[in-house]
Length: 492
Image 1 (tube, rainbow, N blue to C red):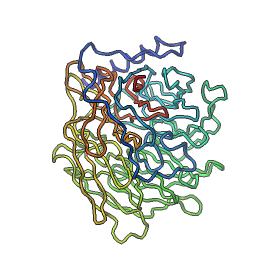
Image 2: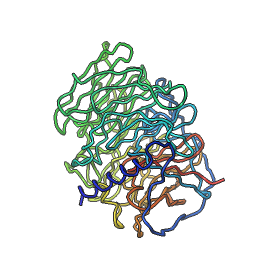
Image 3: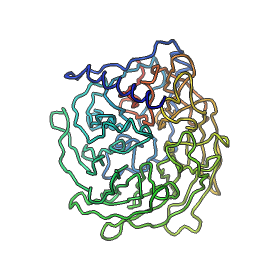
Image 4: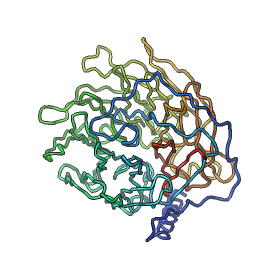
């Protein structure tokens, strides 16, 4: 089932891409014939959240909300831009030829995204029509998506960032880190820097993510064997250390960067704070082991935390652990903290609790979703979906507590986003009605209640498979799906 489904899905997407070869016009994603509810709930009235301090603007990243899959250097998944309120929402879909999982926006409001598939590429897209304005090929492995674990592999450019000069920085599958500048005509990209780091890598080892710290030093990690390194983008000088082999060193997700050169990286067993030494060598400032059941639960791509670390104001950083049930765990970031852990709050039910997506942070609040049950696209076929669950955890003066829990909405794999302008959490849920419908879903940040749900499409072509929602400058919500991208905006 798994390999035959994967092959047919990729083959279908490749055929659709071939059909639009030679034109920039977007081809809509095909749907399964069905008639599920188109809209559920009531359109919202914006209730801005004004009590949350803004995430500091990183000096080497594009404007907060526009720089990467998690919105900013703190990986907050919180945006000051508005999102849809639920007024006659219009859905536009486009076959791009791969899943556009990380979405950023340049100063002109155009979409800059990497679309990962058999033929990965860096794309410049029109934000209204989703038409392709320009494309640059990225190194890929045409057979990678037929291998076990393919749909949980985030290497090869799925994580990238847009810098403060509108340049895309990509740690590619071939062991190179490249910097791409936009062409002056807005029709694509040109590589302005190419750093060959293959000499640092072991056979088969690939980069997972790269980000600059607050001093401009580029940090990078590999998925396996715990390679953590730095690259001086001006001189090309590199420094690396290794954290361990196998599960002890596996780094499945991206990492967070603070405002004082601090870098937070989670392996399958630990959370670590790094700071650069005088020559740029990664130096471990502190490390802590988190609770781990030892299980790779259905919904996880490995047997560790599923979260990129998330920084909060007040000197905190948070992840989820891999206990059963899972905990939201908050730590103090200070190098000399007398007690590192602030709290560990269990969320969801024992035997049905995990996540493979980063937390939302807003002030002293954290929001987590449950991904238990997602083993790949086939887990959302033929009326199936995953275990429901969202929860909000707040940090107190003496610990943490759960504010609310939503046990009705099932979001198989999305990176949800909070809009401070509307007070809504935007997530992506899967229904069990005939046709396998997918919905853009809005939750009330203050109460956790479902406000409304908008049908985006039916069938496997609308599965987002770990892609993150992005809120555009004009209030449009965007999301990568297996064949490409969808845009969802209020009607006029």
